[in-house]
Amino acid sequence: MDFLYEIQRREPVFQHPEWGTTQQDFENLTDPSFYGIDSYGRRYSREQAITTALVMYKDPGYKGLHSWPTETWEIGKFEWLGISHNKLLVTYMLLTRNQLTRRTSIWRIENNIWTIVFHQATPVQD
Image (cartoon, rainbow, N blue to C red; front, side, top):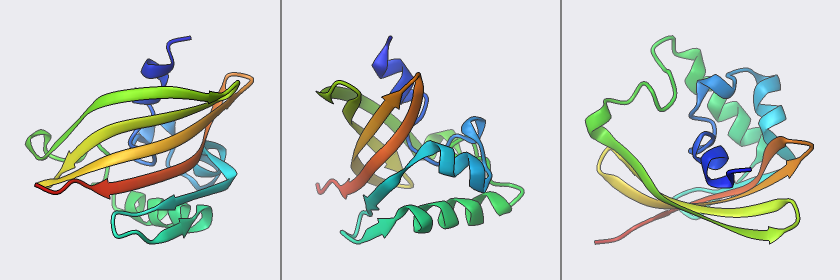
């Protein structure tokens, strides 16, 4: 399996409407123990992440990462590291609206189903 390809198709998490836009879709995407740390250092729960994503997708003009003008975002420098038999640590860089962040996620794969366990966004300073 090409892990890098599979992760690149899923990150940034919640921004790919092809993986779903409903409560059930987001619950399927996230591990029950999921939590994240935002770019301000605040911890957020699975429920908070799902609620935020649902609010974004209520806007009929919002199409996840496909709704941003292409000149305002870039994603790249993907790397992954196996941390157990079924978990990957993934890092990448995301530039959105002139803010560069380093992203870190932990993904689990079980029976060919991917779920995100953890996500963190850290601003990159000049």
